[in-house]
Length: 422
Image (cartoon, rainbow, N blue to C red; front, side):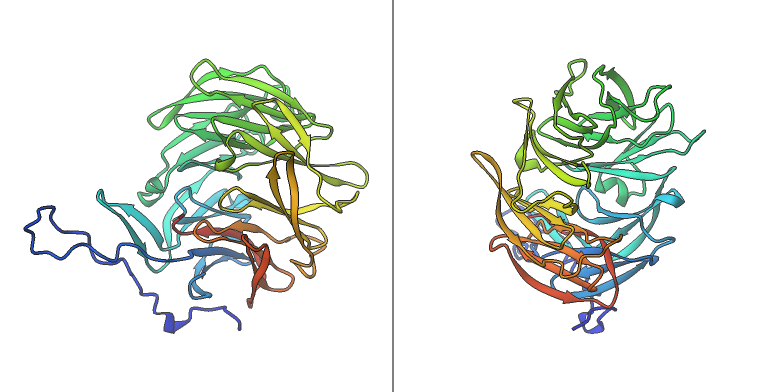
């Protein structure tokens, strides 16, 4: 069965925005106890369509596309807001990020948490800046790093929470001295950002900033060098960045005390994977060699040690096409260029392959767009977009089996899960 347009029967006028929360606290109140504040929902997926100026909102409860959100341009990436209510549709060449309300959210009403489900909609508010590229989502707040554009448009970053987006604003912002392809990792009231020396072609150091209201003030620039700096993740009070010769770990980030530790790896690292449940432990990923082959490293920042991760059958020339964790941070998934999905779990000796699902993607594309990966934070499932077969692939993270393949009448590319994390 194909799911392409709004399915009327789904009268998702379901502003199941459930009744307003009232009621007194006294035992003599004649009002009935407040009920129906929890919605059992698997959430929704924001799905980009290859080369199309639209964002599909796919409801996982009804297995249907419930909204086609018009965009100004084809998205270059799609991400979930830090509270998982909004989809952020990056349009890098056009210097803009459009924001769609996916229609599922939760509010804290003091004596209870109240769930809502409503019709998705596009916000009029946009985030703009030269070449929005790097997105970092950490502990309820997120940042967008704008690379800038040589020679005169400098790099910048914006930091926000869901409440900011709903109010049509960002929470804080910062501009840097010159353009660069970098990152700005939020961590409470601190920000770890890339620094590019005036005579360098790209960033090789990091700076730590502290926040005062809507602005950031430089606290410290760290001397440690990280050539080829690219990729980052913050967890457990530690920010890790990839380097051409290893990774750079920055911790702690309190004013004046941040220090950087260099951890060497046999080949360069360009992507950092992490999960809040793993604390200050990460996975470094990079391509190297002839033929180019993806390598993985278990990064233990407490021990300042990097250990190669071996994936069974990962031969020279094998490349990663997508990766990510399940919602618990227990399983790390890697999709390779043959369409096999490898599920790894960490034991006493490090990450080991628990299972390989051959043909998770039956016909892997030979060129972009490649499949995208996202985890459901309300169910034990992860998803892969399959643009070649025009389908959505759901994997059960408990059984490590393909749960279902849903046919679509478009080529899905980028994915973001939106809903209420459980």
